Structures are given as structure tokens and as C-alpha cells.
Length: 349
Image (cartoon, rainbow, N blue to C red; front, side, top):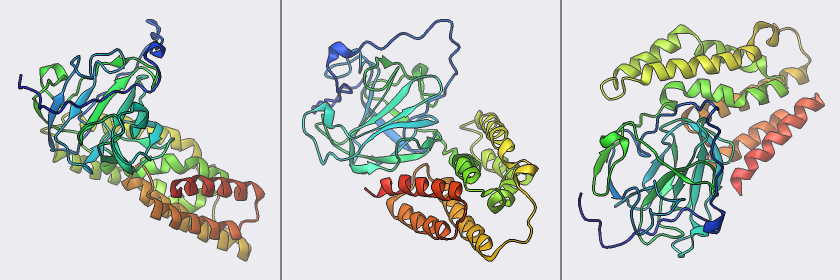
């Protein structure tokens, strides 16, 4: 094991008092789904472990025991999702180091096994996602920094059994040796392939499905759905998987399972009776459907390539949905568009 650099990375996950760290133990009778974790960096990238598990100065407390510090990591280095899940917390406003853990810029992602991953010390404005965004393993989440309780640019990554008040949970990376737990001084290589590159269009459809239903937009993107659910689309996915099969032999099975899950969730929404045949419409209805389709396809394109929507893209989407709203005569659909516009505007704040 190599000696850690002289600069100590004071990476503390706690923002409440230590006495509050009493996460409830999960019921032994409850079946927990298995999640595979990969290093939080782009596929093929190499990084150094500056501080590993159960070590001073900062990874020796119940809420930080199983964390990892990766450094040297220049400010602005890309940070990728270690596993799929849903964003549950984002903080992005701290400009630099303050000595306070409450100022850590952070993205927290909840997983289906009940754990929450925390990505800490991101640069100011370095979070590209918002609370509620659906994340796929390998997604670009944001950019590293040196904020809050930090003394040098780096990324701290760790799992908890609940956000903030939970205890630290051991993470085993599927792309590292030593049982998946790298040690201080180790150099590791990420095999975190971006799943959105394979399943992006289906995931995007799943994310906008509720909006589509509430705005009577089935016919607008039904053709798109039937295209990406087809066998030609699946064959294209498998061709991409072949190129990385050496390092990720599990990828095809994972993609098949995720694809089946998404298709099952979408099938009830895009079944034939949900997409009535095209007929004669009033001029207003025709214009509304045309403008709504433009907005929906634009959002699908954005969400197929990224888990979040950048502020400039959000601004463009707001304008597209407002045009559709002008021509909408259905009050339920109009209300749903208005609600969606407000959620997009929050990304502009």
C-alpha cells in the first residue's frame, strides 16, 4: 500500500450532528435487489484512490467508513453514475472550500437496493441533473470540484443506507480487483459503460410517458415508439455491445432485462387503443398536434443522450411547449403542459 499524499482530504459526508446517524436496519426478511456498481468515471478512464475505506483522517466514522476519495482529479473532471437510479438530492451553489460539510456540493442518487450514492465536492454549478431525474449507470452527472469540507480538488464517493442520516454502506466495484474494494494508493480503471448509449431512446420514452398520456400525445410519438421497440433497434444495440464484450460480458443480459422492463411499462400506454387512427381534425387540433409533436421529439432527443436537460435546452423546450399550449383546447392537456413547463423552468434558476 502506498503512502497517501501529504494533503489530507477532509471528506466528511455528515451534515447533521453525529448523534443523529442511526439509520434503521433493513428487515432481514425483506428481499433486496442486487445492484452492480462501477467506478464513477467514464469508461476506460484511470484514477487514483487517495483515501480508501476505514482510514483517517475522514473515513473512520459510521457515516463515512466505506467512502472513497479519488485524486488528483482536476476541477471540472467528468463524474459518471456508478449505478442506475433516481436523483434524490442536488446541491450546486457553494463556490469553493469552506471547511463545513454542509457546504459540500453534491448529487445523491437512490438505487433499487435501498442505498443512496453520494457524489461530493462538485464544482459550483457542476451538477447537470435535477431531483427526480432517472439515471442510468454511466450517465454524466456533473463535474468534480473542491467545495465544502475539502482541501484539494477531488471526488468523494460513498453509499449510505439512507441519504444524510444513514450509515455508510460498503460498496464493491464490479470493475476493480481485491474483491471490488480498492485501497489507498491503487490505480483503477473504469469499465462503467454508458448504458444510455444503448437504451437512451427507450429510457427517454419512459420518462415522458406520463406527459404524453396527459396531453393526448400518443399519436404524436407512437411511430417513434414502435420504431425503437422493434427488432432492428435491438440488433443495433447488440452490435454496440459486441465492441465492449471483453470488458463487460454482463452488458447484454443487463440491457435485455432493462429493455424488457421498459417495454412492459410502456406497452399499456402505447397499445393500439391508446393511439387512435388519424382522422380529420379541426385546424386548431391539427396545429396543436403538430406543435406538441415538435416539443415531445425535441425532449426525447435530449433525454436520449443525457439524464438531465441543460438550462439552454430547457429554455428552448419551454418555448416549444408554450407554442403547443397556445393551440391546446383541452383544459386537462393544457394544465399538464403548464405543469411540465414549470418543472423545466426550475432548471433555469
